[in-house]
Image (cartoon, rainbow, N blue to C red; front, side):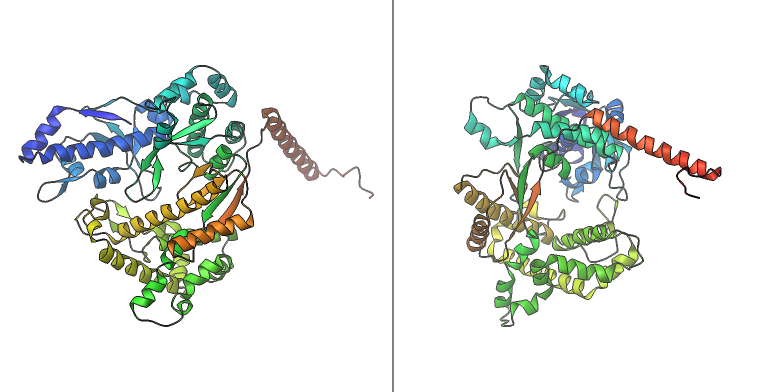
Amino acid sequence: MFKISINSSVLAALQAAFPDPKNTACRALNKYLQTLEQLLFDAVQFGRSPEQLKLDTFSISLQKLANLGGQIGLKRMRVHAWLRENNLELVRTVVEGSNLTGRVSDVKLTDLICLENQLVPDQDAIDMFSTDAELQQYLDGDTNQKIDQLIYPDRSVGDKEWNLSKYDPLEVDQDSLRSYIVWVSEKSNLMSVAEKEHALKQARIILAVSKSADGIYYQCKKPSEFGRIYYEGVSIQNVNKELRRAILGDCWGYDIRSSVIAWKMGFSQDYLDSIGESTELRKIFKATICYLEDKDDFMKTVRHFVFLNGEKIDRSFQTMLLKKAITAIGFGARATSVGWKDVGGQWQNPALVNILQNSEDRARFLGDSTIRKFIQEQNTLDSFIFSEFKKTAPELMSEKCLQTPSGRLSKSKVLAYCYQHSETQVMDIARTVVAQHGRNPLANIHDAIFLRHKLGIELKHEIELQMQEKTDNPYWKLSVDQLERYSSVSKDVIADELAHKARIQDEEANAARARDAGYVNSWSTD
């Protein structure tokens, strides 16, 4: 983590503006600094571009800094806003972020702040990799040990039990990861330059560290108040799917099928009991049950009514958009096209606007009878779960993490809190069962585990049965996906393929010129 220090004039000015014998100014400023430390640490761990390194800027969300950085005074003014208005800001915007592009702001630290104890990988060393050969030369040296020490300053080499309490070990398929680096560098043509740089930086950090730790990349656990286990810095959770496949190699992934929807349906019978309704469950939650039982058919039906035949959009891409939209609804996305301004004055679009950007497609989606029924059912379950939480867990209602900035209990935060705790519980059950059968997950990603070998039908059924019985939720099911490692790709092979394509293009061009000039094919029988 970063440790940052600031000029004493900042605290003095804040204390003068908000005098209080309990020293609330000091506590408020400390909270703001802790938020900023985390954002700066994440920015470096995810990688800075050459331009950012040259200008010494960082990519951070100013909205998060303002929202999470705390408030002060009777009017609950945000510390971030007060610092800016009094010319005591600690970060200055260089490039402003945009909700349209999804890019966060580039900021530069002001003279009032300085960084200390940068416990992150040696960025200058990692940034020097431009080819796989240079990377290998680097890894064969002694500097990879330096990276290991920088990332894990407190890891004990001899205390395995302590290490496992703080770190999750990740077995890295180094050959597969090297092949991925070569592929991204030499062959990938669907990634932007920025995406390539980001993926390569993450891949090289993981490869460098695993090289120095006998093939293991240790992920520092970061428990969330909401129940999940996250990791600090680069981890198997925050890399793209192809990089994840390269890291893990040949394996099988098992994730909860439509997890948040399945979790909500676990409350459906309780809801009917609470209103004294004896109607068959399927009639009340018809759309949701159809979605859980046959998602493919559900998607095909909705796609038919949302996207017109004349639209030049690939069907698989249409389905992907619909999946994102329905997932967003499951997590409480607003069924509206109207945006709003947040507390920082930034314009926010509803999630569905960002997913279904064509307004006519979005209108047909929100007007579809199946989707309208699905949204109505989700809203019913959301309201019931929220009301049950207030009845059964009143001691948690005062938790700051569940409140809005104004201090009210947040429905969306409560639902996220309940879901993530349930998700962790049910995945712990799955991990326990596989461990009883001598299987240890290679990696954990919230609602998914990855295993080296495929589960048999009986074992998969046993896991699902225990998940259902121990949580009293019959809707938990597991989906399975096979991941294949990246094979070694020779640069000579790549060069030959490129040369071959160039020759074909030249030959086709020569043939076209010959036809235009009126030459007759010598193989013609005319």
